[in-house]
Image (cartoon, rainbow, N blue to C red; front, top):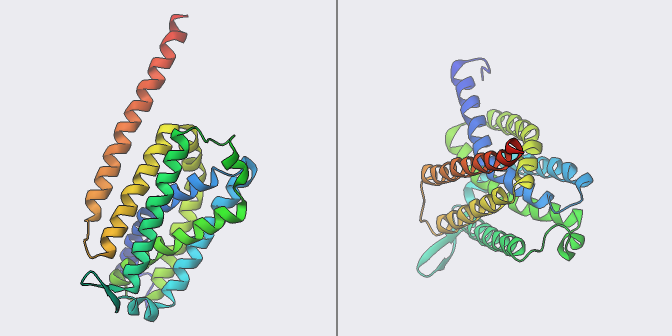
Length: 241
């Protein structure tokens, strides 16, 4: 394989971009979970979480035969054939729905970082939750990559490059999410949307990713306008004073 051919470089760039896009929801989830830890341990949790994501994806890439077999039906549920991939997507979707609902409830009820829930959170517990979601996000990403590129080496390089970029972006994204409570609720709402999408996809009801990304992008634009307006209103009393 010629690494410097136009076809290989285009495939690598496209797949890297796709891996980053598919990894944004993973970064948000890691940021929210790591935010429950003491500040000194949050950066380490984010780095290890992304390394786990990279390791999971690379292992799945080298297990292409097993991944392909996941599409074979295992059993029927309500006259619908469930494969291994469907089962993982359904369980992952249910976990996302439960976890997001629990996090939103905790913030609405005032169980913030100073409450008993914060003290009960352990570093290992956070990593276990991150690792569980990494499997779901990685499976979807790997199956997409397999459908786009034939060379496993190109897939591996794309995964490594995308994770390195996400490591650089994880800290500012995490800091921004933690500084703005409304953004955190919005991010958790995105995870609800993604969880529902995974659940429906597990039952062969595919929602085009473009619709989901458009809805998320529109919500982010509206929230950025709100944040800008709040800053403007907060600065006016100071100017009058």
